[in-house]
Image 1 (cartoon, rainbow, N blue to C red):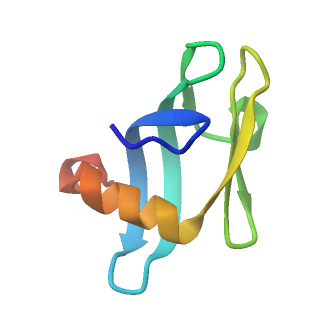
Image 2: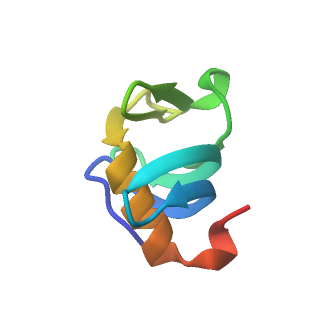
Length: 87
């Protein structure tokens, strides 16, 4: 289970270029918040998943814990989680 510092990623659904470590598409992220322990699925800015230039911001819906994660780091996580997590 990849640890981002603020969250443990349980699943990541999207597409990434692993060679160039570019996040092409991100549909959803399921994570556990390390601050409050809540497990949540984020699919849009309204529920905790916001694309920003060069990365993504995850926000816990229970406690508001936030973290920006780079596209390269997400691509690396997706590669480690395996093809079954990609759409």
